[in-house]
Length: 243
Image 1 (cartoon, rainbow, N blue to C red):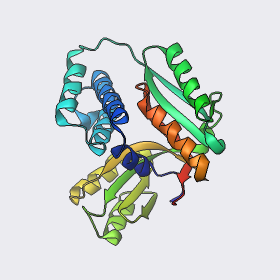
Image 2 (image 1 turned 90 degrees about the vertical axis):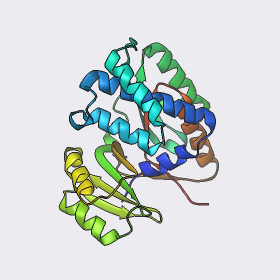
Image 3 (image 1 turned 90 degrees about the horizontal axis):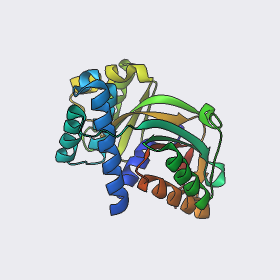
């Protein structure tokens, strides 16, 4: 499958340092709270909550943190008014980047993100400058440890409406139209296939391969964005070359 693998990003975060881990936990909890506030606590009828819970699972967020975030959404104890913002720009080597953010102060967030981009060899662009390079897709990842039969999994996924299927050394990745998310999720559940990750993401049409200094600068940029509490998701058209 072409394009930057979000699963690679998730695995990177699992090994992140304590500061980044703490920020990831905070922003996922915030997303859960807002999802509950907007659509209720039942993930069956609340896609946003379903995706937030999947992200919490993929990042090993403790159940106590998840339950507190849900209760905060139900009880409305967090009165902060968050605004959803999307920024677009360029990273090292001309990599296209899109950021989804939740902020209670747009001016502060804009200044913070602009500073991060500038510090690590990137720059923010105008709205729409890179969005045309991405398409929204549903992405499911299954670890080989939990399901080994590649042919069977591919058949199940394609029969359920998947657009693409790819295999790596340790996992399988299923790509589909976002409207088919529930159908594919149910097909996997019916066959008792556990997903390591299930999300709706922005997938690039083409990718830039990074190595050496460019890869180092991109990694530092990603880490800095991960540490920023307002940044919820980062999408990019990059891949790190194996060294």
